Length: 504
Ligand code: HEM
Image 1: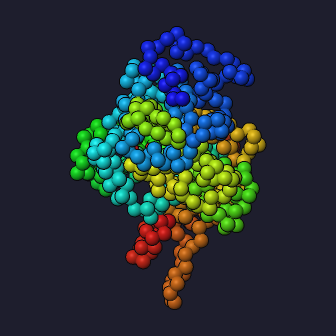
Image 2 (image 1 turned 120 degrees about the vertical axis):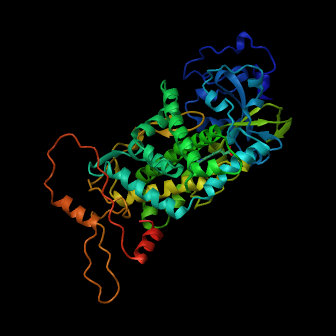
């Protein structure tokens, strides 16, 4: 059976192909389309559906997207890997998808943001992919990860300073959705653009609300301004490296790739960070392993990349020729869902899906082959430092609702935690250049050599003790947070070196 035999592909649309209200939830026919094929977008629980499809069809299963458009869901780990690593047989050029070529996809199809072809590396193939991807890889290669971790640490300090005195927060809306944007704005070269508005715009775009177009325009304008500034005067940042790369990207290509990077990085990393924090909060064993040193934070992050890959699936890959995958006959122009979520729990690679993966990195959360995610180490660094820093700042943080009250939104592409309400002991703001700590006052560093003058409190420690001496503010609306002052630079070359080396 191929998806085409149950779809309009190859046939003019008939009355039976026109979508109509289906049977209500609860009815056995709910979620099924022509030929009994399962409609992915109607599933109440996609993880359960993937296991049903695996049991019924094996590692590659036929299914339906919105409007009953046919698709193959690639469930097997080996089959996903084979698909993404075989560019001679499969490509990411959406224009080759049969239903699109045959005019069967309406312009306002809900998956159009994934389907509409764009001149970006994610849709490009062969030499064109090498040209565009080469510029991205070169820009990523210029990132010094020690400096990056320092930026992430500072960003965590700023973001946590906004709520640490309140004793409660929503770690999705106030932390996980802010930190990746703060860091990515810094990496791209527009730290001043990071604010609540750009976070709101990115959220809005991804959720596809009515204002998504305006939000997209807001982000595109900011990236266009950045491109123009860097074209006029390149500096040492991601945007400048794209502008000056020998691939000769046009302004539009630079802007569109900055947008691709910003959105690809933002959504996935926010999702990953939220998932790891949630696991720490709901699973005492997980937290105890972290606290007790049996699990490192990078291992915790890797575990969540196995268990809940931020992109559950990606649409899609397209067959360039008649071929075979997982025992199925795949026709030229067929669409296939690259599906890390079911692949990561394929019983052939993970017989016990609850097993601790101990830092194993062979999950498919970052894809594979020529399109494998170029920013994976950036995503990992943001999630690792983000989890570590939050637990350092708020060591007694606890979930403020029952675990079963947590709400998720799910689409074919991803599953998102909506909010993560927590409570903790209110703590003062910290100097953004200091290492995140749960002590209110960073210890004064002692000079080690004999005869050194008595150490003076650092400006940040002095500021912290001044804050403690101030009378409590009257109750009332909380004033907008003021970032803690940056301290004077240490004078000695050795201290400056230590500051650079440690990153705080
Ligand atoms: C936890 C964080 C992240 C996850 C889970 C993730 C996941 C993915 C996945 C699954 C793909 C598609 C791979 C394929 O088609 O085979 C991808 C592509 C991509 N990602 Fe990421 N990503 C993350 C963070 C980032 C970051 C921080 C950047 C910033 C540089 C980034 C930039 C990109 C780009 C530019 C592509 C398109 C690459 C191409 O088509 O050649 N991602 N990512």
